[in-house]
Length: 206
Picture 1 (cartoon, helix red, strand yellow):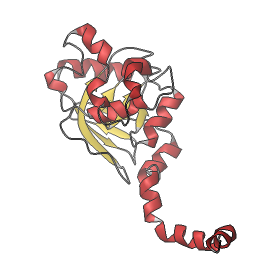
Picture 2 (cartoon, rainbow, N blue to C red):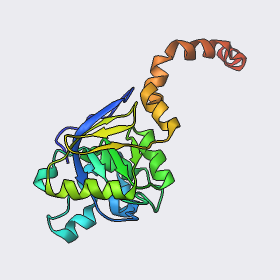
Picture 3 (cartoon, rainbow, N blue to C red):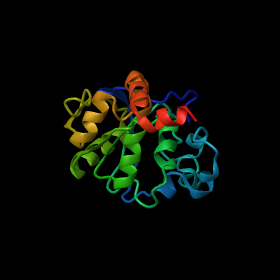
């Protein structure tokens, strides 16, 4: 896990970072964060336990344990990533480990929605393109620049046209994915609405 964690806020239009590749289809949320870690009071410590069981099995050879990947922020995966239970802890654990964006062949719908809700863009590419990135990434350090506005991923050696739902793209570019920041930015509108609600005026006199 990274030593410092800073959650994303507001508008997101550019994500730059090192890639980390995880090969395998149908990697479910129980593998991402095993059920025994769901008892936590908050999400703060989940990054330490991401892929806990897989990492124990591979005894230090898991991509999330390799020294060369310790600063990675862009996760490259295959098909149906995040399937299984709907636990929001899975994207929270990935984010607290340091992941800021995910590129894959496909994602489970609820996992995708949970990622969007906390500021992790999920992009899709063809199977051939994903395999090309993973093959390159396992032999060489790959730093990728993601231009969300134009849906582009580029490096010195590889360039891709990324796919992302138009509604999700608009939410990131406008900052609307960040409900807390949106509420704070519209504090005056909320206050005015509060004043206009007749039942609140009635309760104020009780």
